[in-house]
Length: 360
Image 1 (cartoon, rainbow, N blue to C red):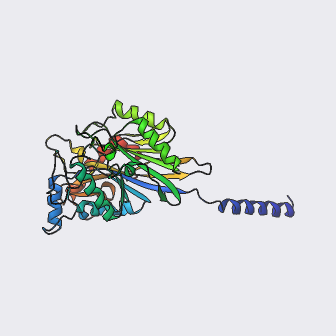
Image 2: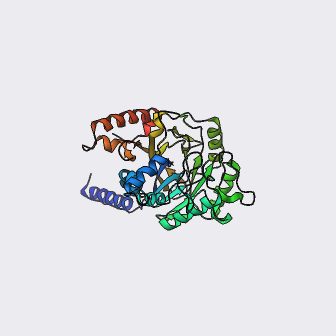
Image 3: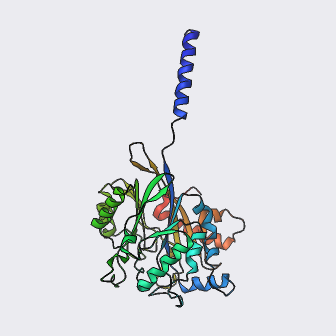
């Protein structure tokens, strides 16, 4: 090969590399989703202790997951319970009403948004919804699933990294409580036809990515129900939804693609104090924060990376804190006993979603 040919090839290679290196990465959004925040009396009792007896401080419970939530573009919680109306004491099962300070702690933990449609949405009636959304406004974070007006329940657009994202929230029902006859828009019930219509409206508003939160499944049951699967198939078949995340079962459920769409069927609980010696199994204290990267291809299609599971566990004996299982197993300040419980929790989690768990 002549020197001239070599020089020519070198120049071509350099030009190709330069051209490749200047191609911008597709716009993307990283998201994190966690399961039910279900505030039992033991939790607000601990929060009162944290505050020194005045008000309620839930912040220490979330402190260990804050770095992970801060690392993504959009961190989404599921708040299963409304806030207690002004002048009313907190309440627990069967009609929950959490202290108002909870919302500030959720925002302080790094959450940007919450889904709020659940079977407990109507526990405090219309005033409970109004109170809850007032606290969201005060904390400076958004929600979907509750509404003070008909317009508020409609799909909205979030602008994240230059990408238009719509996040929707639905529940299987309200524990036998009916939506107000004149205000059926106060929350949203799972109905594939409605969800597809809402996703269609979101797209018409300019949404480039649509994510749906589903409060569904059977409590304490890890297996996905026929109802969940049927709804997931109907929704994903529309081609309008890019990701589904679920909660309500209070235990972890599987992750799989339905019609090519990643579906996280059950995130478990992220914060609760369920009576594990009575009606609920020990795995009701297991949870996961699922992180997902969604990228927008040049042709407008959304590419969703495989979800990554960060296992969590509620330490009921040490301040009711949410522990990130894998980092805490590597933390020298965590006691041997707690680590033994974390290993048990991790084993349970891997039985359900093992191939999605981040490397330990």
